[in-house]
Length: 211
Image 1 (cartoon, rainbow, N blue to C red):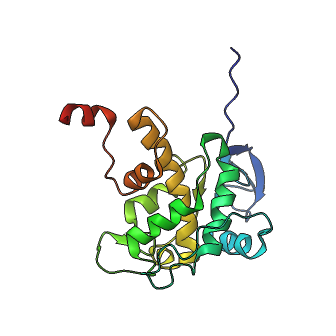
Image 2 (cartoon, rainbow, N blue to C red):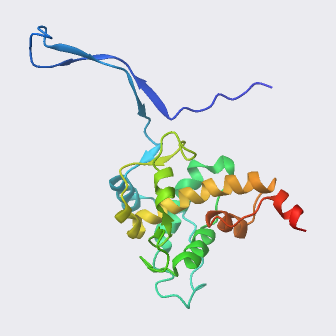
Image 3 (cartoon, helix red, strand yellow):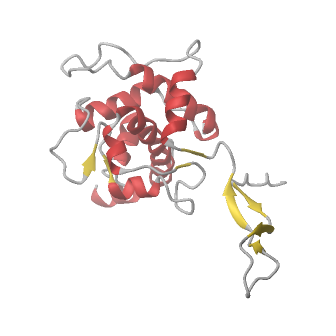
């Protein structure tokens, strides 16, 4: 069977001349810049791009998470618009590996922070989605496990902004859906995806050994 070529996320920018001050070492005033790799549009986002997409996104066909489901939490429905936008955005990006339900990310946020912008109980994680420092690093690593779509120039304080933290969490949840499927050898349930996000999901082989 013919293999589908893997879509590359970077392109080579070839050698090109650059003007520099004339000197004894370089009397021509021209140097050649080595070729380097540049990420293609649509394979990364920074904070400004996230804000622009959120403001301009077409909301006509969005599927929103269920309202009134987490009434015991203050502001439980406050972020439904952001959740709906970014679940739809990444469903379009990663539809081939299975779409996410917006209720999954809402349930995740409820369990992680109770919809508080920056709970202080966990010293190793920050923000409404309780993203850890190592995870933030992975989400920005062009050679890491999330390399097919990364974020750039994100800082720890950005995790305290739900408008940024929620898109990051949704992207990471897609990655955890893939790793959960690999662990279990089948499609994971919503609950299992959330457990994998939290680092609590056990592999199918580990479950068999303990039974």
